[in-house]
Structures are given as structure tokens and as C-alpha cells.
Amino acid sequence: MLLEEQRFLHEDLERLEQGISDRVAEDPRHVRDRLNRDHQISGFLNRIQDQSKRLLDIYKDTEGLRSKEIQSISTGDPFDEFYKQMTEIKEHHRRYPNQPVENLERAYKRKASGEGESATAEVDNMFTGEEAFGRFLDLTTLHEEYLNIQSKRVSYLQYLQIFDNFGPQYIAMKRAEKSTDQYFNYVGRLADYLESFLRRTRPLEDLDKFFASIDQDFERAWEEDSVPGWGPEAQPAGSAVPVTEGTGEGVWCPDCEKEFKNDNVYKSHLNGKKHIKNAKARQARGETNGTNGGAPNGHANVRGSTVQRLKERAIAEREYRIKRLASTMETVRTDSRVNVERKQGMTERERQMELDAFFAESTEAPQRNGDDDSDSDGDEKIYNPLKLPLAWDGKPIPYWLYKLHGLGVEFPCEICGNFVYMGRRAFDKHFNEARHIYGLKCLGITNTTLFREITGIEDALKLWDKIQRDKKKEKSGGKTSCRWRTRTGTSCPRRSTMIFKNKAFYDHLRKRAIVETRQSTSGNISKNEELTKHR
Figure 1 (spheres, rainbow, N blue to C red):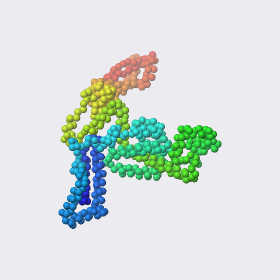
Figure 2 (figure 1 turned 120 degrees about the vertical axis):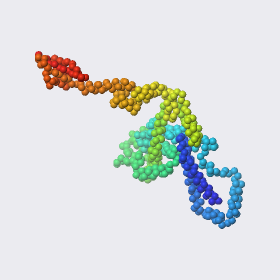
Figure 3 (figure 1 turned 90 degrees about the vertical axis):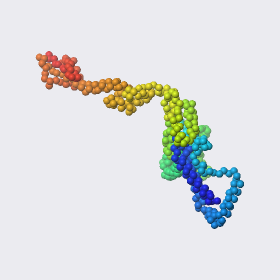
Figure 4 (figure 1 turned 60 degrees about the horizontal axis):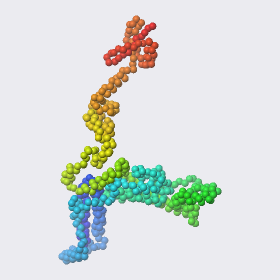
């Protein structure tokens, strides 16, 4: 019954397309619902590919069964063929009486609330509590493993910033130490986690093509020896491995590359931790301890270098993949660091309450129609009897944080139109904001930097007038005029008036009683008229 199967596949494809279009038209507000929708669409797309392959195989008809069925229907008696197929169907259901029948009309239809839809979505078991449905990274286990493989101590916040950097300034490991199984397993698990996180958060993207491009770029960079930190090691000129065999008088240790004066000192150092560690590292690099097991030196060195190069290539491939994957998730990485910093300022009880509220919000939100959404928006009320400010999640902040920042203290500003600022921080910040600067400009004040702690209009105007008067005095001050008189007391013409620009010279003349000062006022400017004394 290939024709019936062919018809069923066509119907299934049409139902799948309709189910995808229904879900694309939706716009979920919660990240959980949005991820659940994307994963459902991804599952439908995969089913479309599988069903299309089956349909193509039927049309190819490599065995000729479809042609035979068409020929039997078109040439023989149609009633005989009908009853024959009906007998086969009855026989099939007699053998399998409890076989469920798939209803394509309801299989891909979006179920509304109350129609038996499961409360547990597909994405509920994909993410941990720290990941918050793909919003943040959860690298706590990998951070502990990172601390165990190297001696450099870094916090989890620092690890989120440097986990894709493998240089000597970030990880306290030499190139030879990276060839260990412990480091290989660490970078492998880190790469697998980032790849899994990307698949879980971006189900509709063609990630296989992206991963294939990463592999191609690495192959090209490895052939060109341009992978950072994994290029060919340059040996010192005129030397072989090991670099030196000592003076030849003592005993040489190839593991530590050190010479000992006598055999007793050499044997005692063999039990030391440093020698054991160097011996394991040298063995992991594929080198031998003094002998090559009877093989020629050239063949042993070539075989050891080949094995070592293969190990380095596998580790370098994982490091390269981690760097590329981390670069595509830079936004999630930054959000994770901000989330960790925020949680460090919270107590354990507050963190647990926030996590419970997040999961409760994601699980109890049923699927509503458009009319129900508009009606329920006005019914959702937040219990806030103390009138506390709202945090980033739309909920009131803790009361202790409210008291810590002094948000209950009011700071009114008359220049801003009697606007009241809550808390000292907001009050200090508003002097540089557009509202306060605009209020000063309306009063005719241009230099706003000198009016930082002034909030009253009258005080601001008085200060501005004083500043203007001081500027005028500075422009008119610094010049002293004197008028000379003759011995008989008659004054000289105006052209004999002198202007002293040198204050020191003017004070010198006053001390010697050569000039006298007399105050006179002309308009708003005072003058010093200096009268001569003739002896």
C-alpha cells in the first residue's frame, strides 16, 4: 500500500508546515516559552526532512513496487482490489488490536490551556538553575577542575573572563605540561559544554555548518603552523635534545636535565617529588629515559615526535574550538559576569527566593489567547505596601538595601521645578542631568559648575550676581592713577596723571612719602589720586 503511505506523507508535511506557521506567528514574552517554541519548530523541521526522504524514496521506486500497485489498480477489477486491500487492513488490526492511530489534525496543533497540555515543557530539563534557560553560563564544575590542573588561583568571576585564554599569562602550565590526560579531558569537557549550550539556546540555527567551518579553519591554521601557542618549537642553535649532558664527571639525570656529583646524591633525588613529576611529564611527551629499547635513535625520535605532535594537535583543536565558540557567546558571557557580581551582594536566602520566584513564574504562566492577555494585564498587582523602588525584575528591592542607600530621605530642588529626589545618590547625580542644567539656563546662569549644592532660585541668583560683580572688579582693578600738583598747590593738567602698573613701585613711593592717597568717586569706579609733596 505504497500509495496510501505516499498520501499519508504528503498530509504529514502539510500539517507540519501549518504547525510551524502557527508557532512562528506567536511572540512569547518569557524566555522559557520562547525556547520551547524554537525547540518545537526545530523538531518539526527535522521531521520534515525525514518524511521528505521517505517520500523521495517512494517516488524513485527502485524496486518497482509502486508501479506494480498502480498497474494492479488500473488494469484489474477495481472492486476486487478494493476488497483485497480491505481484507488486509482488517487482518492487520486483528493482529494488533490496541495499536494507536495517529491523528494528524491534532498532532501538531498548538494546544491551549485546559486541553491536556503537559505543564512540564521540553526545555525544563535542558538547563540548570544557574543557566536560567540559557541566559547565563554555568561553569562552576569546570572552574573547580581548572583550579586542580594548575597552580594559579583565580575566582569564578575572573574565570568567566579568561576561560578561553590558554596563554602562559592566564594559565600556569607549560606547553609540555598540557600534554597530560587531565588537561586533555578538561579542554574536551569545556568544548563539549559550550557546544551543547549553543545547541540548546539556538535550536533554529545551522550549527553543524558553523562547527564544520571551525574544523576547516583549524586544519588550515595547523598546516600553516599559525595556531597560537602550538607552533613548532625552535631548538637552540648547535645543540641537541637534551641541551647538555653536563661536564661528564658526574651523573646526568635526563628527566630533570641536571648533573649530580656522585651516585649517592643521584639515587637520593630519584625519590623526590620534583623528579617523579618531571619523569611523568617526559614519559607523557613520548621520550625515553636514557635508552630506546634497542631501536635506532633516529626511528625512536621520529616515532616519539609523531605521537607527541598528534597529542598536541588534539589539544590545540579543542582550544581553538573553545575560543571560537566563546567569541560567538560574548553577550551571554558578559551577562553571566554581571549576574555573578549581582549575586555576590545578596544573601543565601535572597538568592534562593529569587530562584524560586523565577521558576514559579516560568511554570505557572499558562498559554492564553490574545483577549485573555489584555484582560489579565490589569489584574497582575505587585504587593508593595512600603512603596519600595522596583528592581530590574520588576519586583520591590529588599528593605535593607532601601535603608542602606537612604532612599527614604527626600531632597527637593526648587531649580528643577520642586522635583523631589529620593536618596543622596540620586540627588548628587541630578546636578549633571539635563533637568537641573535647563533650570539654571532659564535663570540666565551659564556657568553651571559653580552651583552644585545650590537648589534654591534666590540663592542661585545672589551667587550669580556676586560672581558678575567680582568679574567687573577684576577687570577695573589693578590700575592706580595719581595726579601731580605743584608747590603752590595748583593741580597739573590731566595729562600729568600717571598710571602705576607696578604695585611694588607704587608702595615704594608711598613709604617715602613722595605721594599721598586721596579717595574720590566717579560713578561706580573709585580712583586714587596721588598728590606730590615738594620739599
